[in-house]
Length: 368
Image (cartoon, rainbow, N blue to C red):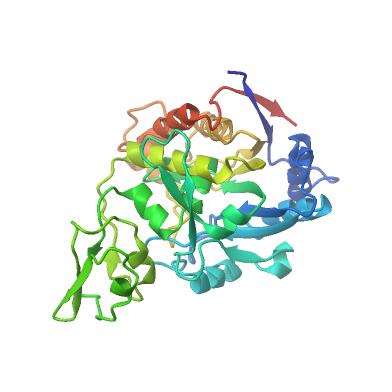
């Protein structure tokens, strides 16, 4: 397979070009203008950051992408899907509040924030997965499916479940509805935390398979009837229903890659990753630990697989910073991410993404 082009620029500036101007130049040189944006709804998939976390990308970077898309005639919006876990982004109202608190508003970015899977994370479309080994139909947030163009804007970092958090994770896990996220995380069925159940019956009213029953006004799930769709998780007002956690990191990575393919198949797509504040954990945490390496730079490509691989290589080529969590980790692998999270292996995601035809790990790095 032909090597994919990945464009890169560092964070050095001059008196005539600041970081934001440099990012715009990177996007243009990388070929974003080759996409026909005219009157096209353009989903800019970004992580708004869990309240309390400060490692997420600043809204200034999003505005650069938004302004360029609008200049090219597109109709951009910033988007993400609701989270599966309890936190500040588990429904659209809290999610938008979190986005605004962290600076992502129409006034600061120049476009609207739309939570793609709706109020409770149940507004989804089933998208067939071509060549899917683990997923036959991905459950994707409706607004993302309805969009004409996909741009992923990623904060590249480590991740405790998938090894790395980059373009593929931003697309796959990030664009899955709450039920989709459950499918990626687990092949099992959800369970009820009885101490949190208030007996409101919202779960049973939304169960299409009559799998939920009540004992002493407390919900329980018949796993013989349950199909694992996850809608009960989305509608529970008390987060009393939780997904099973029975997946290996390798299968999680493969499912994430298959979801990413479902998101971008048949649509023009472009991917941008900023390797800065490389935190040890996902931005879904309400805190962020010290970055493990110095800031590296900004990357852009039409190939999300090549982009992720280029970012991994760039981080692994950096010396570790003193005073970070890496001082507590054993240096077993010649790989910062494997040493940080030994039970995960980011290779499985990229290998499976290649197999799915999502891109190639072979890349040509072009520095501007």
